[in-house]
Amino acid sequence: MTAPLQGSLMVDIAGTWLTAEDRQLLRQPEVAGLILFARNIENPRQVRELATSIRAVRPDLILAVDQEGGRVQRLRHGFVRLPAMRALADNPDALTLAEQCGWLMATEVLAVGLDLSFAPVLDLDHQRSAVVGTRAFEGDPERASALAGAFIRGMNAAGMAACGKHFPGHGWAEADSHVAIPVDERSLEQLLAQDLVPFARLSGQLAAVMPAHVIYPQVDDRPAGFSRKWLQEILRGELKFEGIIFSDDLSMAGAHVVGDAAHRIEAALSAGCDMGLVCNDRASAELALSAVQRLGVKPSPRLAGMRGRSYANLEYRQAPRWQQAIQALRQAQLID
Image 1 (cartoon, rainbow, N blue to C red):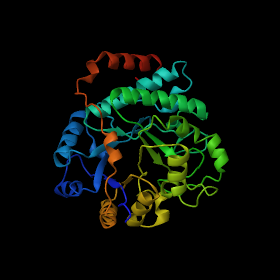
Image 2 (image 1 turned 120 degrees about the vertical axis):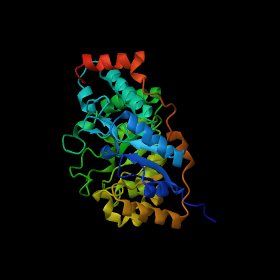
Image 3 (image 1 turned 60 degrees about the horizontal axis):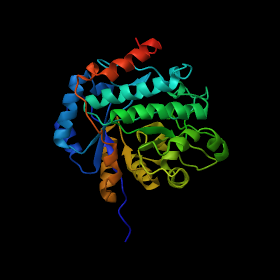
């Protein structure tokens, strides 16, 4: 008898508080995570209250957000406006500043009761992908690895696990997977020499990885997030990665190549994802939930490692390390 497929769902909500419908969805054991977007966020205290209300329904849920810095920063009013990571690279103290940014970001996210920011971006800046662009640390793989490693050290010091994205690299494909299906025609050898380097270097420091909705036809005809070749053979097998694999949002256009939400979640979990994100489309989330219920999916025990290891109170700005980090970023003219 084969063991049941492991996996779970991460969903979202529409507003700044939970509705009765939200509570019913979050009570389903196959739902193991919730991601917040800008529409869910007003200020730090409101986010903390929302997180508390979510945990009253499901204390074990992983609560996530995209808080990279630069243009991808959902927590804004009452939070530090971190620079885009590409802005760090040319500073003589770039590694120290990257670590400070990781610590600041994680401290603020944890302080409002959330567990995880999907960061850092490990894509390389090849000057081709507008959707990646300044979100990347560097175009040079060794330099990008070093800066991302420093950012991860800061995250970990604050009590947050790190999630590297978008495996095996979204920096070459020009199309935006939110609205199209990007293709990267390079060979596996080229990818191993360039875009895969940060994932390989940092495999032991990453608690999670998020694959790209990009097709690499010289390796597999499916996007990486639906590919056993990429997730099982390369990420798990060759890179020896043992953490969580989160799908990117399965509502994005780059995921539609495998069918409706039911087919997408089944394909993602079958390929090796531990958690599938279905966002900005409640009907699709419910369809995906029905699919995983039919599959008899059980959440991965690895998920426990994604919980925040500490939740600071909202007075964290009085801490000496906070003051030092802010001063360093101001002196480098990276924040106001």
